[in-house]
Length: 222
Image 1 (cartoon, rainbow, N blue to C red):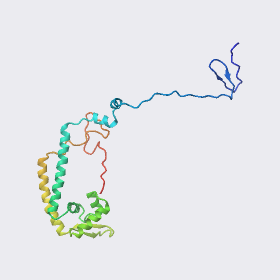
Image 2: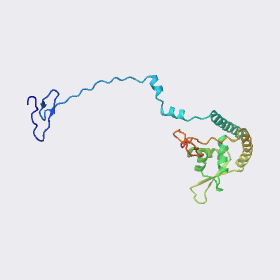
Image 3: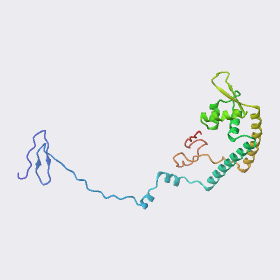
Image 4: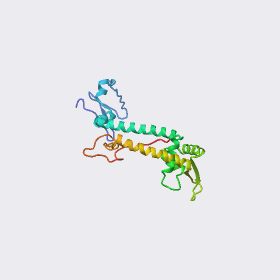
């Protein structure tokens, strides 16, 4: 038959060509040409129509204005309290850091006194920073060091009579100020528990309990 392809021996293959005919086995050479594809940078309108993940969270999480006002009031109250506390400490002849150190020692539950490591945890300090703070407080006659009875490698901290007296006077003033703040900021913490899980999308009919549904926060030591 005219135009019929020649038979292919068993075990071999052939490539049929457009328009008829075949290429002998072992002599096939192929080439491909990629057609150019027209591309263009996304326009401002295209970017506006494709919101980012963060934009999607902001759009889905809708908080009332009162929530922001309450958070601002709480933050402002905390900052004012810290500023007031620093002023009171200086008026008593202490630095704010020394005041916090005395409170960390006095408020520690163990009657043997806290270690420097425990004080560093209370004050969010690195160990060497806590050592320097204790050194300065000891030089000022506010604290003293003693060796632990159970392990002489462990150093415990205690207040001197002067340090205890200054802390007691400051603590009484601070308790009065906290009572005043409780009147100015009634139920400041109520309603500020996380409402949304970490990804920012509301769970219908559910409200996260305090400490749940919020990402962990890492606090840097100084």
